[in-house]
Picture 1 (spheres, rainbow, N blue to C red):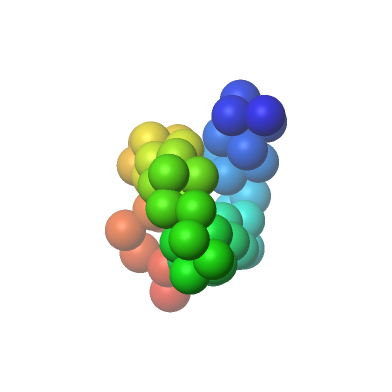
Picture 2 (picture 1 turned 90 degrees about the vertical axis):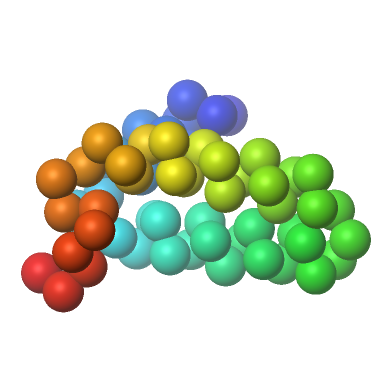
Length: 59
């Protein structure tokens, strides 16, 4: 699942998957499952940092 989510983040040029993943991670943390929320955030971060537009979401 980790590879699939990473692949989705890399393939999505609009940033939708990254934003949805961040919202899901916050929901996990709100529900008390901080470990799963942190894992999801780390997957998204490690796969989005290699994207050329990861710092500029205005495009």
